[in-house]
Length: 359
Image (cartoon, rainbow, N blue to C red; front, side):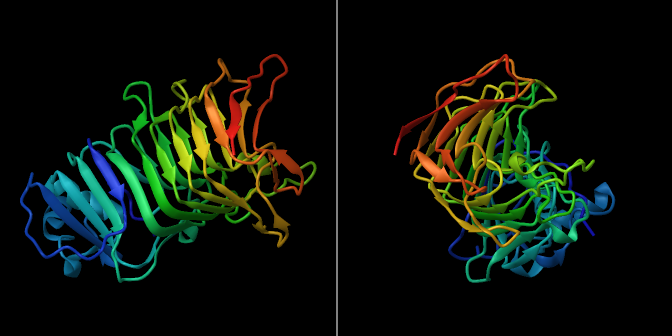
């Protein structure tokens, strides 16, 4: 059963990173400088019950390995109750089932570090036990500046891994960092009726750093001829997708870096930009073949490796997007595709908004 996420916000920085060793047992007062929150599978809950029960639980739980809480939502409750400025959340090795975990208003932390706890085993977030799982986690402009840093694995989510989306009133999501995480087995080829959008689905995001991650087996199935299914098509899922907030008609996602990642077996273009997204850089990435859900050896991409696409909703072109890599690659469909390409769904409007800038 999914633990209902506690709606909490952050005005600061959230970091998910590896940590050398558990922090010592310390008592942290409200509004203190530092705090360590411990999380382990099967840990206590600090996010259920009435507001008073949640507050009471959150002040007692999570601050030692012996009182560890059981989910990221519980960790947020502890952080909100203690109001620390600098927070480390240590994840004990094991499998977690958080889904659609929303970071939003209410937490006054400036820095939150969420890390695999060294020496406790592999950390895995698995969406298969959650009915209609969408994304692993959701980031908003009111949340902390989030840095998700592995090693950890995020797998079997229907829509994707991280959904970060800004809005007209609060502005873009700024300073997101995603580093050292494996995103795998996402989309409706793996989760029935999964939306299959992107491992990192970024709408109105600025200054993100996406480094040293692995993106593999992000696949949507080909619909059968005449099918009335509303499932997304194979080309709709990506490793990284830069776009806008279509509900607020915001600007696109700008000045983001995709560097040092490995992409393998993605039925849509590995990196996609749209909706005026500009000045995004992809460099030093690796694109490899692997086995698809159909057990075929394939590459990644449909139209290109880093593509800019114009949809019917488009009002302007992006600019300054650059791809560093080879001229051509093997696609998911076993054809040669360009490293950088621009395309359009409409005949009256096209953009050349991404260029190959070097190898």
